[in-house]
Image 1 (tube, one colour):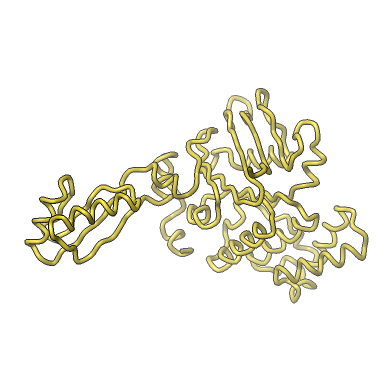
Image 2 (tube, one colour):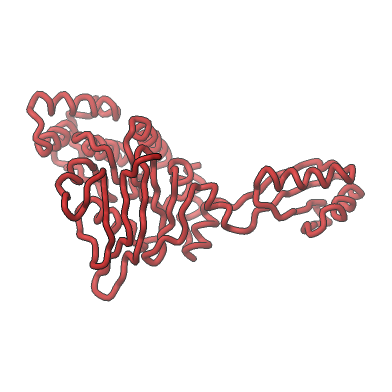
Length: 320
């Protein structure tokens, strides 16, 4: 059985009369990417701040364990096992990339020689060696994000919290960041990722939880979440009107379009459902000219569970 890197029961937090987290349960397996999705104000950043010891959990919260350490009694041990990259860069633009790295090495109490070795290795790993001697203020957004994560890795954390790490990045920089995250997980690091980019969670996450109004609205793999939203169907297109009419009769309940000679058969997108449609066509001696399977995507899931729109369509399309 896989060990849990993060386990929280009944996570609660309020600010005045506003309840931000209302009994959230989290279980994140070691060496995986866990993504917390939700609209602005859903409580994603608050959850990260609590789990990373930046703020305390509210009254009534259950036990919280991070990296095998109890958050309430061993906060310092938790801090030693984690790294945090927030929504806003922690990079100091007035000093060079290398100086930023060496500053982090000092904060982790590494010796001068060890700090220089670690800094050099990480700068090379994140393709920043050439820019290391330049002020960080001259870096592009993607370079600053890479430096931010490199700084986070100075202490060799086994759990990393990435709070909306690709917000504001161009498509190429976003894809580069995805590759970095995949490499971290391949190396055994656990990544707790918050994001509003649905394709990001779809691409990276082993498990996804959708947070809405302070509660987990649903949790599962991307495919499991897509199956809970209705609207999937098999679309059949015909060029022969006679074949179209026979298929309409054979596939009772299918929605037809007489003009385009297409049928839509409700389906959950599974192999069994597709085989059922094909078997019924075969039994009637009918062959479709074109068959496509449509399943709901995470956009549909997000909207159905939160009632909120995701990122603008043009933004999503640009990164696919």
